[in-house]
Image 1 (cartoon, rainbow, N blue to C red):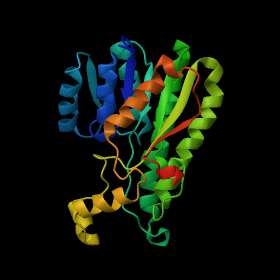
Image 2 (tube, rainbow, N blue to C red):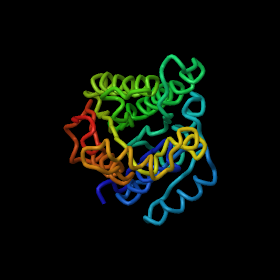
Image 3 (tube, rainbow, N blue to C red):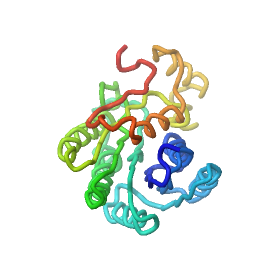
Image 4 (cartoon, rainbow, N blue to C red):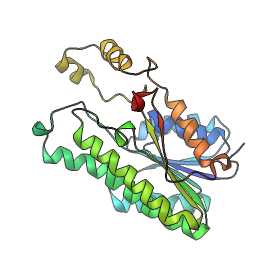
Length: 257
């Protein structure tokens, strides 16, 4: 197991990419701490992680709250003694909407989670990793951190900003043994931004929406959360020891189309 006896943290770990990554960390031998805001999904994910044979801890936490993020890192270290890897995954998107129709409240809400949340996590993760002399941080930036997405101005802005944090911090801490990279997922199953209500509003079924999205991807289909998880585990491993400050798109060709 490539990450045996290491300690990994995943935010937004109760579903989708976060859940898949928490399980993948466990399968690679790491002890796993994961956070989220839904207790029932946290319990389900805990059971799935334990099936890999590792220890895990679920912490109910909102990354938009600095005190809660600080407490999350402190609880991780109090429980397992260290923090080797962090996947800052918590975030959300919305259906496309023209910029002039979007409210400042919606903009601020998105920035609070997608950008401030990543900043808070990095701040306290780095503080701990500096005491250890090593660590790896992976931020979930999305393809929207690399290209423009029509109708998704605030989301795209938040994810571009995450890339800025990633690149700047990678330079700041390269000599301290801390590597910081980003994954940039494309359209991934299990991370739907649509709800039955929103589908009704746009007059589409889930199957029609899926077909529309898939047709825009050069490879012709959406990715799986496990594909993102495998990439995160690789970036945390010694096989990626010379990689820092980099985005890695897992998108079926979207960013080069």
